[in-house]
Length: 191
View 1: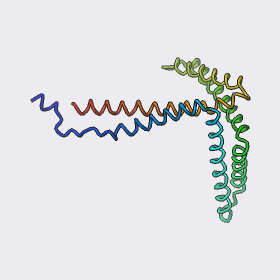
View 2: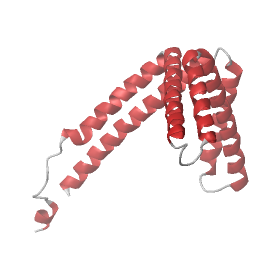
View 3: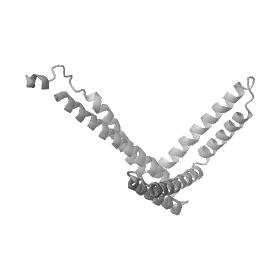
View 4: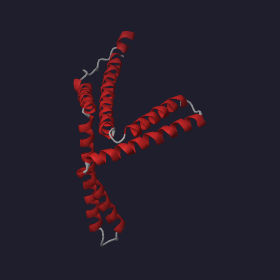
């Protein structure tokens, strides 16, 4: 009787698409991320051009939206914001190397500020797990200092490297999650 309760007669076969498709997608992202990190200069330029294109599209849509709504409520600030967004986007599109330098500078500043914030708050608050935040803060601070010390030449490397590592990490995470889902499904199917 106990054996009958352990066996699940309505057990569905595990479809490979339930875990296989996310695993393959993760594998593709991992390969693309490694490639992007290896060719970090090209990745940085492509990212800058993509960012600039998105800003141009957003700015133009903002200008169009402000002009369409001008009869109902005047929106000079929305119009000016759209024009500014378009101009910044055009700067990134037509001056991608300068744009890469600016984005790298912003990333460096972000890492320094985030690192200082994490280390200081973790030391002051001493909450559960504060050591992990402290360690993250030190890593972020070191990364920010490395970015600043390598400018302006480092901007050719850092931005593409960050994008590549992020894509590879996302792919690896997707692969691990799909394998874990398969393991959990198989362990529940036996019970």
